[in-house]
Amino acid sequence: MKHTVVALVENEPGVLNRVASLFRRRGFNIDSLTVGHTEIPRISRMTIVVDGANTIVEQVVKQLYKVIDVLKVSDVTEDTTVTRELALIKVSATASTRSEIMQIVDIYRAKIVDVASDSLIIEVTGNEDKIESLVQLVRRFGIKEMVRTGKVAMVRSAAGATKLSYEED
Image 1 (cartoon, rainbow, N blue to C red):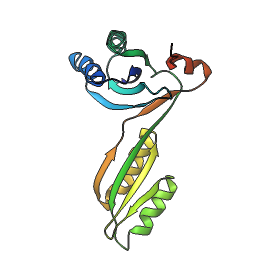
Image 2: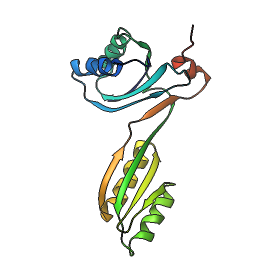
Image 3: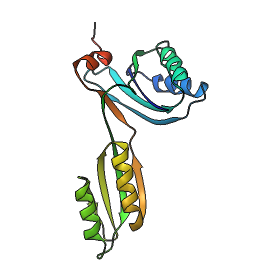
Image 4: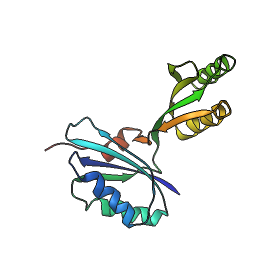
């Protein structure tokens, strides 16, 4: 089963390596890893997506607490969350296919962020299914290049917010 683990960490060199090493030692392949600043300047938020048995992921979450500079950890898989990814997709486009691609982009509420004589770059944000669906639709035009961010997740509701909030001393 895929798990989404969120960790609040000190924004210090080496933290990412220590966290990734813990997953590596346990034999987990990280499907997605996103790290970014939070509302507190010295704190970063990691969102890690891994595939594994519930009991083993629970052990890894407990072990993450022992990693230096890890402040809070939570497996938010079962929580009600808002999740998003971003993808940039460079698609081959000719004069005859450009309008069809633009219609698909519009239906998905995506954006065309660059236009060249032979291609379009599409920006799409949403959940994994939405992005995957758009990718499948534009594949027939020819995907020249694609990049996706990892998943970011935030627990909904006031009760969930305290689960991963951090107060400075």
